[in-house]
Length: 113
Length: 114
Image (cartoon, rainbow over all chains, first blue to last red; front, top):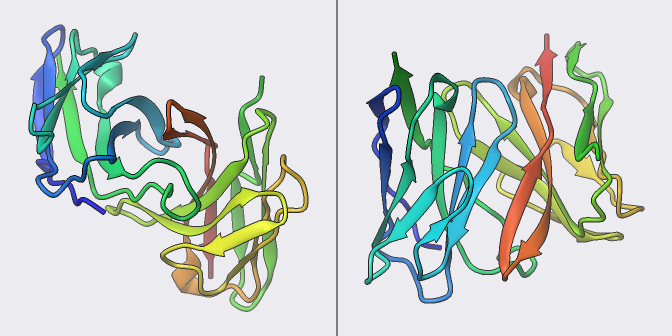
């Protein structure tokens, strides 16, 4: 599996865009990029995923570089409730053990007033 | 729609005791899994199931058993609790979304082993 590298922590001002980077330089052609977040003591929450194209949903946007070696999760207008640990994961499509998601330590995003 | 329900939310055990953490989902998801999370760490996969009657080991399976007799339920059994099993346990279920594996997590079960 491709490994990911994320900054340990980041700060963002409330109301501004939060841009969370993730490097996955060994990603293979069929591996998806997933983003989850975990707000203190709660179960992780799915945010978004993508394969090659940029993706947007009601929570965030995912920008994947053309070579797919890195991606950026964008929270367009961060609020205090977005303070959480954000996990970037890459994984092959679902299929037995290959579908398991492996979580690293993620990025601790602190949104400040 | 309840999603993924875990019980109990909190449990204290003595070393050597056994117990079962319950996990139920009402979304008809085929895939279910158990993770544990220790302070300052990411989630580590304990066991998973790709359907009723099928289970397999994850990264840290020792000391835990699972079974999957129905699509809805995926209990995690601690056979003889040890202090090293003090952790927060999360159950998840998932569906396919365009080939990807999108997990829905429960709220967690916090276990303390004395």
